[in-house]
Amino acid sequence: MRVPCAALQAAWRVPGRYVLVLRPGARESGARRSIRSLRAAAARRGQPLEVLQTYAGAVRGFLLKTGSDVIQLALRLPHVHYIEEDSAIFAQSSPWNLQRLLQPEGGTSENSKYRPPNDGRNTEVYLMDGSVHSSHREVEGRVVITDFNSVPEEEGVRIHRQASRCSRHGTHIVGVVSGSDSGVAPGAGVKLVRVLDCQGRGTVSGVLAGLEYVRAELLPRPVGAVVVLLPLVGAFSRALNAACRDAVAYGAVVVAAAGNHRDDACLYSPASEPEVITIGAINSADQLMSQGAGGSNYGRCVDLFAPGDDIVSASSDCSTCFTSSSGTSQAAAHAAGIASVMLSSNQNMSPVQVLQMMLHHSIRNTIHFLSLSETHQLITPNLVAAMPSAYSSEAELLCRSVWSEMSRGEQVVSRCRLGEEMMSCSSYSPDGVPAGDTTTVNSRGMECVAHNGPEGKGVYAVARCCVIGGLQCQVHTSPTPGQEAECVGPQLHLSGCASRSSADFLSDSRPHHGDRKHCIVKDGSTSHAPSRHAPSRHAPSRHAPSRHAPSLECKVLEKISVDKDQVEVSCPTGWTLTDCKSISQGWALVGPGVTGNSCRFDRTTAAGITAGIAVCCHVRPPLH
Image (tube, rainbow, N blue to C red; front, side, top):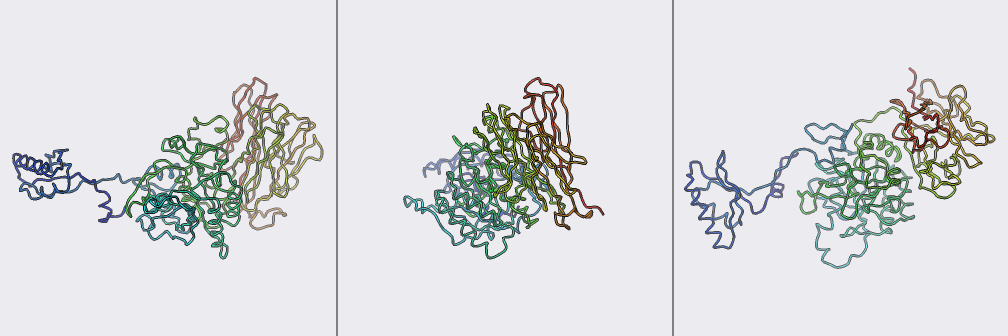
């Protein structure tokens, strides 16, 4: 913390309260006469005087509550040594939100001071908001107010005169991103693109124009490390989602607020766009942020959560003022700061790599979702953003599960993001009656298709989406129903299995590794074997990788359960789960399957032997 300047000290004052210190050797009787004289003088001026505290130790005197005129009289009394205005003091530790980002493996925290791996100075953040108090000491010199301005006409004129209110939201958000003391990435540069008015209101058309402005700025030069922060939300808009998707396609990491409506984030934009990193908000007790009747949005369109309740940051009231505020805007600002730190370490990271890294280093299963329905508890990610402590230059396989919406029709589709490869496809039905899943390839890429059972009440498609340089995917389908789908070739690795029965019953398809890498299915079922080319930095993927290049290695783990209520199989440290299957007699097992890096199912009937099967892959380092 810097030495406070005079202006900062003035901002810490406690008006109307004064510490009066008596001269050394002053007698108690004289002190009492001084107080009586002050009370009389204050009464004559209509300003009451109240003694709040008496000090009789190292400092002898009084804490007074009165007006400044009475204090001027007190300074003339013979027994008074000096008087100072009461002022605030602060614990010198990082606020809870910054400390939370350091858990469990983030930057160091010496003497409770927030220290990220770097300050994000190599990243440029485009903030789409209202006005910003750019001369605030927290962000002075790091904020550029662009010439773009697309805000709706405001009703009334009085709000135009309240300059601090116009920049309240934007100043607080930019402080969370890059504030010297309150920011996640205290060195990141911020460019303001004004799309909100003084009341925090904008239009879809205005944000579209703002994204066009950002695109025009980035196109003439290499994109580099760029984050676009959208701490705003509106009704579902295909146009706004398309514009955000385009921003990601030309290399920008787009981060958006989930919304403060205590609702499904998929109903709002830009939160519903799959290519956007959508952030929900939690409080310090690991509960969803609450605001009266509202609160953080949730659901499958949220990628992860970040601190968003009682966040201390820059205030637009003065250049040294701070204030506390809450919302998913603040949560999104935390994620934008983390992305800035990541990109400053490696400017070649793609937007989806940034997302996968954030998910990989997040804190798992600490959020209390009791206020959500069972359905939303199932599909809402229980992940809290955290700051990675370091970045490895080694290739690493990073995966996530992507849920579709629940379909009550015949089928539903889940897709990976741009730059990801689909390693496996599975289906989940809350009533345990799916009819299988298939992996298809079309002009949009690979798709995970889940099929509803004949009496099913709904089904989800769950794609396992992974990212690693050099990874290329193919889908091998069994020639006829009942035959096995197989990956042929030493450079191909089986990362999962999917199957569908034409008879509309659940078809178990299990992966098998060995001399033949194939999917085993029942009679009448068609199987699909997603196969992966091993990554190689030295050889094209159509050839076997060099023994000196890193390569992909996969193995199948199986755990059999006879009498337990739950079956779980986990990938070992250093390996990543790419597929999760269960084999059972009858409808014995249900569950979403993938839980972190484990495959887990719950028994619902007493049917016989059950098994959980996991495919685990990792990048094998090159031989030396």
